[in-house]
Image (cartoon, rainbow, N blue to C red; front, side, top):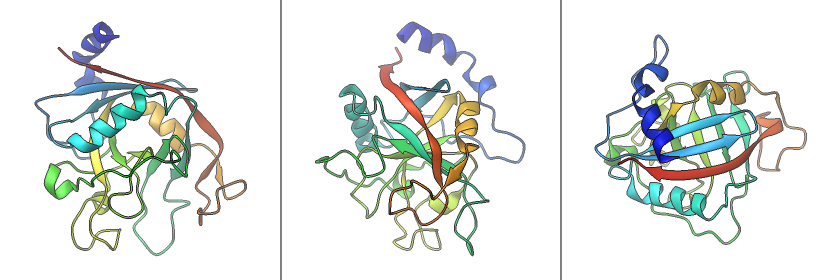
Amino acid sequence: MKHFALGLAAIALAACTPPDGQESYGTPQSRVIDARIVTSLRVIDLELYPDAAPVSVANFIEHAQAGHYDGGSFYRAVRPDNDRPGIEPMHLIQGGYGFDGLPGAEGITHEPTGETGLSHVYGAISMARNEPGTATTEFFIMVEDYPGLDSGPGRRNPDEAGYAVFGRVFWGIEIVEAIAAQETSLDGAPEAFQYPQFIVEPVRIESVRIWERE
């Protein structure tokens, strides 16, 4: 798998050029760890940034290597047509172990974008949370730029802490977009869902595997 990752690296920039009107994927990182999410639709490859967001990256790796994501799913798709009214709509998919997280998992230290220098741009992967410091196994991937999820005043979350970006998609962004386009509903959704963002047939995560470039 390491050889495959190195082969993809040479074509990653061409394969993942943001569409017209979108910002760049973010600042290039000096050290990158690659992760592969195998879904029931196909593969999504990620770059993880341990120098910028060491706690979030270590947490993701720990759960991946423990197999906690295997058999999980992408179960939520937020789009302009199903986001809550009266606010600038966002566009993302969410998944992981499951909506309620791994039982007994301890929350990790929050790494705000104001400190990491990362941002919620197209293709960014970020930790889902309730209060800062509660993120465990759930994450989301951006389908459009949405700086309102970054830390700072006037953002979407009233606590102004934002969410913790820790990497980006470098291959398979079309799979992310396909997941985002899945039919959604409130029927069968967990009680915490207030809007029809639950994917009717969640997209299965077959496995998540990690390797580091040489």
